[in-house]
Image 1: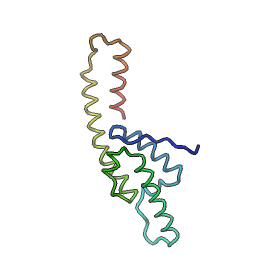
Image 2 (image 1 turned 120 degrees about the vertical axis):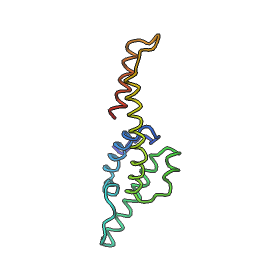
Image 3 (image 1 turned 45 degrees about the vertical axis):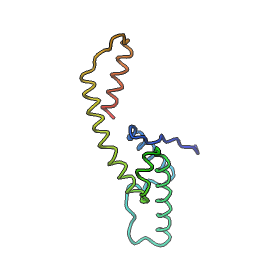
Image 4 (image 1 turned 90 degrees about the vertical axis):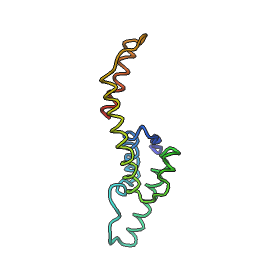
Length: 132
């Protein structure tokens, strides 16, 4: 299981992206640098190890961003700060999409010439957007 497939963050798939990139970082033993700041008073060896993990995590995260997203976060070199900036950028947008999907679901009507299966599939898709 050498290859880990993480979807590119494109602005609409934050929750799936976050789940998969966290799993990938965990497999590489890099998740600690996105969940905590660099501890004070580290030995020289531990500080070097933390710095390497931080650099690796930043690289993995940036490589999983779409071109537009990569440019937005290009200057950040601290994994935790990068993670928090991405999260704050997309969780607000996700809440807006949930509200929009909920309103659309509430007003859902079957379209002319739409099969019952297509209608149900469309309703389920909107429901998934509300739940996620």
